[in-house]
Image 1 (cartoon, rainbow, N blue to C red):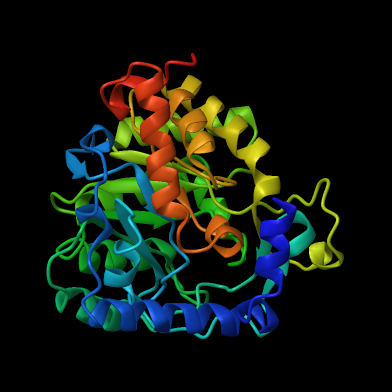
Image 2: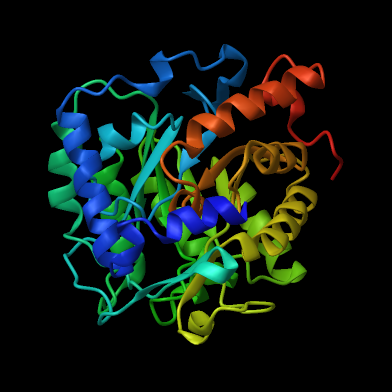
Length: 351
């Protein structure tokens, strides 16, 4: 592990500012897709990994979390890495620049990232033009929507985003859990959440609606969110997002404000997954996010109740081959334990 990390740190991308390196990666993946790179799902991914969630057929349970390709510029290239789903965004009704730079920081000693991007994106209309121009997709496409920072009506922004995205997406995720838009997480509670879910469910037509929640929740909040999601008939919960916690971090950049993701988030993310599994009783599919960077960890989350998993920061430290390694390892673990499908393993660890 130390040798791998040392190699990555010396790589050209790690010599660059984190946001600049990210932009170059997205540009490279976009070019890769235009060059006609073979799709990874066509290169021997086991049918054992096919997963049906929310009425959708995912070729495998490993997805790309929102935030990597905010504007939908490299969807084809990202699918070519082997992902069963790619979630673009967060997209807002109007373009916005986000927070001042620098706003993205690698915490190399902790294998983590801190960001305070602030929903920087070119607006949903521009991204949907790129989505409409896509050819065959190798998996499920999610579109993650949010509210503009300066909006006078956040619910109206979410409704506008859901309405616009639904005809183009396999599923739409409403993101009310970013710590980088002041007051956004208030929508996770009480009547505000119930009203938001009712409005967005009415706006989505027949497209499945997912809800993305924060990991920084106590058990009472978990129970309330679970009840609201089940009552509104939301199709899945994405558990969770980045955290404001900095417990146990060693990097000098750990003091930067924003949301932290990566390996140190794993323990909290596992705990919130267990809480939501208990609170929902398996009545709604769960998608695990946070600190997932191996097939073994993906399998742990599946056994704990996740129907799908998503990753982001793991790619920063493990590289673009991570997805296919995870798929091979996950398939081997399912086979070892006698599971014929991912669905057979969901929640077997209890909860």
